[in-house]
Length: 560
Image (cartoon, rainbow, N blue to C red; front, side):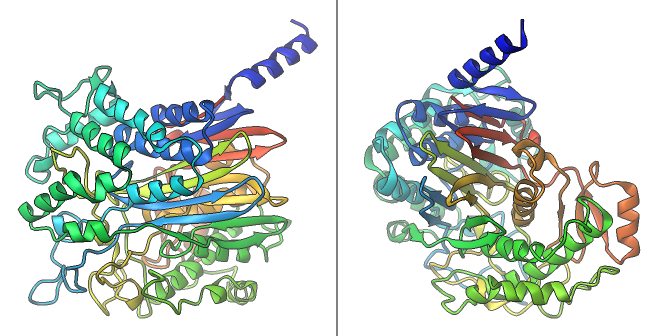
């Protein structure tokens, strides 16, 4: 085949279909990237039907509630960032809330100590779910297809089933092996005969299909009122939980203004509190803008050291200042996003040695790693970045068999003990103490980066407290180091969160020499196999380029 003929064939394929090379997928008419290929295909099919980015995001999110139950959910909450093709942006906050009966000492014993596992593995650990309300509100404002059309694919996936994969099968084996700790997860992955569904066989979730049918037919009222609400309240009473029908009826998702920043010629749009992600990421980008990359080589010892010091300062401010804005009206957001603050913080960085985190001031609450993210762009260039979670993998490990979905354990994201901060990461600062109807602070960081005023990069990740830093480094990789989206996602990443005072690094991607050099500067080093599980899209010159993190296993970027 001649070079010219080959080029013509390649262009024809690009126009008609997606082309995958390595982890990167190309398309012309839109793209969906999520941690489940089945869910991504669901969203892609909605785009093909004429749906827009919001329609596809909603359909993908509901599909993930079926195919990715460890984090995809209707029993949790999250955040959605939307930017249209002219650069106008808004966000939807559907973070879970503390129930009306919640108190700031609800997880303490008579001696004032935190009761072990009480804020993660009990019915009291369950926050009022927000996902259905958030997806409904976003669709009500921006959706093009009907609500019924975008929810129906998830109903069919649950009711008719989909092919059991090895990842889900391994989860089933895990829960089967720990019946004492997870009694309610027994039978969750089973067929009608009570046997765990084998890989390659069809897994049907009839109860979940029935719940999704009510949501399809009645909108958010199908979850927060009526049969589902009654069953949730009954489940809580039976398991010593405190969520009631009143909590569910009072829950509302909120449309909020995004937080904005700039990095050179790019505009960064992300989620405002109660997500801490946007503010913290932008403050770190502001610090990186002070750097001359002519003298700070990518992945060098000096580069990793500077990243860690920027993270240390940004996460310290996160812990001190951020929480639910409805309960903390005086948060100094403008101060934290001021580029002058970034200059002052950079001036305090010693390039020869590590700063020491002062645990007497404040620190970071640990967060569960098992969130999930999806990125969507439609043929018109409208973009959605959506991150939602149950907190831990499979949340609280508690499921109502008649409803078919798993409940979150997000109450563990509140500070459990007022006024007490430890070097291990527990904090007791006021902005994130438990109060009725308060939304717990989050690290979720859905981001859309605009170039020339239009959506250019859509990115996000799970990873609990590591989310902000993995997204931050990926954004930097794309817009500073001009990486393709797959390379930016797969590149080495580190994490520092103020407390514990240490650098977490990807073991196979950071050289032994660099590790030793960082140790000699005073950094404590701790390895991880991978950080984050990023899902991203770049849109440029009429071409969508998408990639799912190779660590996601079942993840896929799907376009057409």
